[in-house]
Amino acid sequence: MYRYKGSQRDLIKYCRRYDGVICYGCGYFGKITATYLRENDIDNIEFAESKLQEGKTVFGKQIIEIGDKRFCSYGVVLCGNKTIRMEMEGTLKKTGRKDYFLISEELLEKLDSENTYDNPFPIDGVRVLLYHRVGYIENDLWKLSVTVEQFDEQMKYLSNNYNVLRFDKEWAAEENGIAVTFDDGYVDNYRLAFPILVKYRVPATIFVCTGNIDTEKEFWWDEIEGACLRGEDESGCYEHRKRVLKMSVQEREKYIYELKKLYKYEEYKRNNYRTMSRREIRELASSDLISIGAHTENHICLAARTIEEQLYEISESKKCLEQITEKKVITFSYPFGGRYDYDKKTIDVVRKLGFIKAAAVERRYSEETNLNYPRSVVTSEMGLRTFKRNIALQL
Ligand SMILES: [Zn+2]
Image (cartoon, rainbow, N blue to C red; front, top):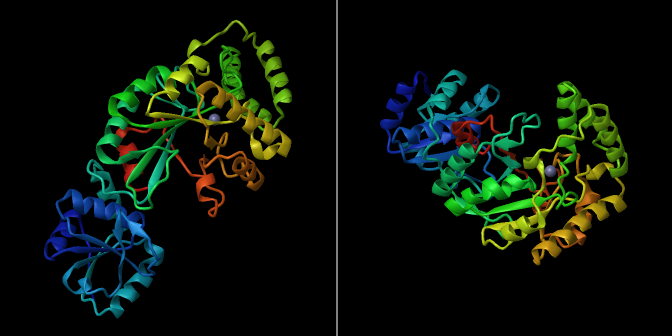
């Protein structure tokens, strides 16, 4: 069996000799390579895997079996990392294949850096994006914000390239879909994000933490940040946040009260750090693009608290938002959303309260598909290319 290796040019030359190309390997290597070939006008691309999984697709395509008749007339590009390469070569040999082109780690890096990801393949299923704030924030210590310009170009890109779906609707398995969500309910969602969502007709779900509605009070992590920056104690932010994370609401409030007193933070009021008001939430909920979801009353780490506290936090935020919007609130997002920020008991509470979908960041239970949806966090450090790449490669 002849093994071709070489540069980007050699790869293209090899592929052009055939009617089509089979990318053998559907992971990171396969996706980057297929994107490169497509961006270089090689369109007839199939994917093959050693072990076929029922119903699994890559870039919206059915995966073909090793030894499929196309293995005779197509070029084969071996897309696997060092640890599985030998095994793949062995499998390929058994098919009677005479040659293949090997994608080395070095070549993969070059292909990836040349890919623009401007014209993406369809993605498999639906990806859910997580935003928090839109607008320029001077000290964005928690990395919650993207700028207005970034958000505008991202929404434009999504609306041009994907089916932008509502988080609160049923999705078909094969949808090339993206759902946009926001956590917390910062006022900039209303002031800055909403006009852009309207401009591109992109629907979004906003999960609102209800405890501070119609007050000027900042979210507790922002109070910590504000106090620490005022006290010129930036590193203290992280330490204090860690300390209060698993506290009860009362303990946490007392702790932060003392911290603010220590750094004389009271006189500071940052108008763009508040939660949306009842009027603003109601206006968004009345738009056909926005659905409002719950996000607890006080943004606690649910898994660290008693079942009674969890029930109170989740049901209060639901009740409050239903009263404001005069609509049923059927979606929820777990505060923080990490694997250990919610557990089976939390999911049971969410189900009992009648939520049909719940969003996390990391999925913890594969069997609870709809009640711990994973999401990809979007931050301002991501340039547009990285944003496109992460979605295209389904990272
Ligand atoms: Zn949150």
